[in-house]
Amino acid sequence: MFGGLSPKPIPRCRASTGCLFDQCRFDAAADVRPIDTVYGVQSPGPGGTIVVRGSVIGARLSGWLAPNCVGCSVEP
Image (tube, rainbow, N blue to C red; front, top):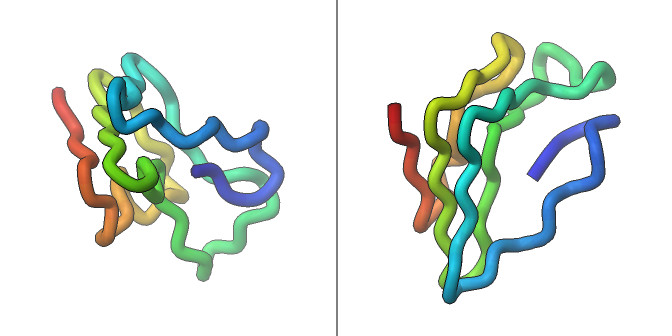
């Protein structure tokens, strides 16, 4: 889910439970170039869901969710 030199990617969400990111900060790693397209969440995996709630997105990210992120949502 993360690009570049960021921490280890979080394992894919289980379809039965999904994942909630509550009050998190999403940002691009130091080695991500300005021309790269990087999203906060790429995909939950088959049948999974991801909810991003009350979080902050870094200026270098292209957006919260990748365009093909099925099962993903952002809440205030």
